[in-house]
Image (cartoon, rainbow, N blue to C red; front, side, top):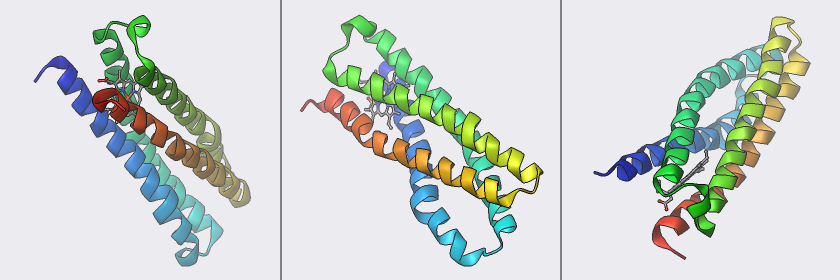
Length: 155
Ligand code: HEM
């Protein structure tokens, strides 16, 4: 397989890992948690431990995505050589990565600090913001994936 082929493979693998994880956490697991873990302190601690493991994987997937994404841009002739589909991918993909960084260093860190103070209310608020912005990334993933498919298969 060519370098572009391998980069493409790793790119899609990283997308599946990251976006699939967000989908599962945001839309399946977290909404049902409140019904089973009623104590706010236990719920906040459990959520944070889930986020911690998940974000470790997101760092790996995000790094692979950025390296393979910009690597493919470079192999394809640089930013000036990109067509509409590839530009859409670069812009939406980069936005998603920046949003993920904001989630990590913003509400996720705030949640960790709130937990060390045993401030369950603030931890719950921060967790809700992690979910809100992750949800935005889930929405952005649709045009990003569409742009990728558009780029490979045409309109
Ligand atoms: C860091 C930002 C990103 C950059 C610079 C980037 C760049 C690229 C490039 C250059 C391609 C190849 C297009 C072609 O072969 O014609 C591509 C493909 C693709 N990208 Fe991205 N991408 C980024 C993030 C993302 C994200 C966040 C997603 C999904 C949520 C995504 C999903 C895809 C898909 C599904 C493809 C088509 C399969 C493939 O050729 O690998 N990308 N991307």
